[in-house]
Figure 1: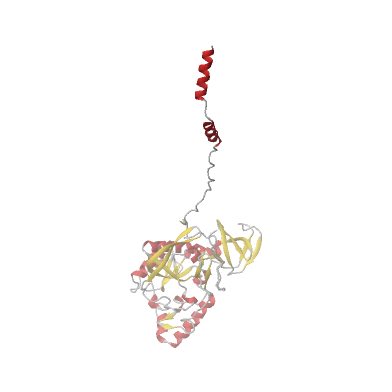
Figure 2: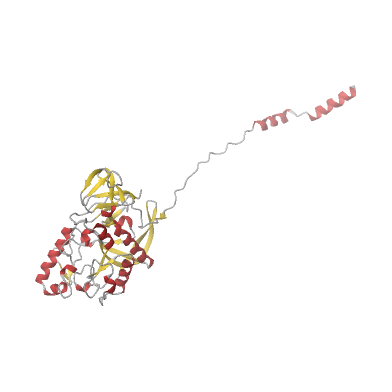
Length: 375
């Protein structure tokens, strides 16, 4: 028994941990796991994307105008309360579209208007087009190459301003909303061929129209060549400058040319990617734009400007060159109708028909925009 105790004691002493080993063991048990650094999730914004719709950019944030006196309604319903009556030419920012209505804001008030009777500023929704409204800085109107007194080379009205949405100075080019969608299509056709529309004018104030009528009449009565250029069978003055309220005042017409794209880039407006043309060369057309004479005629004789199909049976003027025919193809394929007397002029008869009996008289000048980044 005594021997067994001695053996067990010796074994215990041999296996007993030293003080140093105890310290190491205790130190090991005191080690706490390292705290992992806090992970902060960084959410990257979505990259800009191309807008998919009936225009290049959404209409929200674009500038619109009342083409006639309109009721600002409390809801998208003809029977809803009228908040205010908008005068013709009132500008506003578009907030939303619901069926036939726009929710808008103007002068600190918001409400609903029927977009059927509204103009929209084209640069806000089709920024890839080149805009060059020469009537706002140096009018190109001539007749048989001769200057119109008080018109040619003059700024006829104010129509360019800083546009917050586009972050640059840009022309104000309004047309009826329905027409803007066809212009968009025409531009897409042009872009497919590395071409672009160059729009010289959309809405034109009635006062300016009448100033041109007066100047052309004065010149024609003093110059037989000019008179012959606008009043030789089968043409008459009416075909070159309307003596009454014209399609430009109503908002269903554009004056447009065509250019070859030399260089382009992509830029962003809000969350959207857009094409930006940085350099272009305009094609040579049958005449300079706004040459008010039969030299600019599309066809050899007048064709009803109110028919969507009569022009298809008309005989082309021999001077209609390839670029002019290409421009005509882009515009007519998009649903626009050419004017017999001017290669640069195209109408939207559907837009006209939608406002017949309650259309603009052009009694206002549109010199301000209310555009903001798409909402």
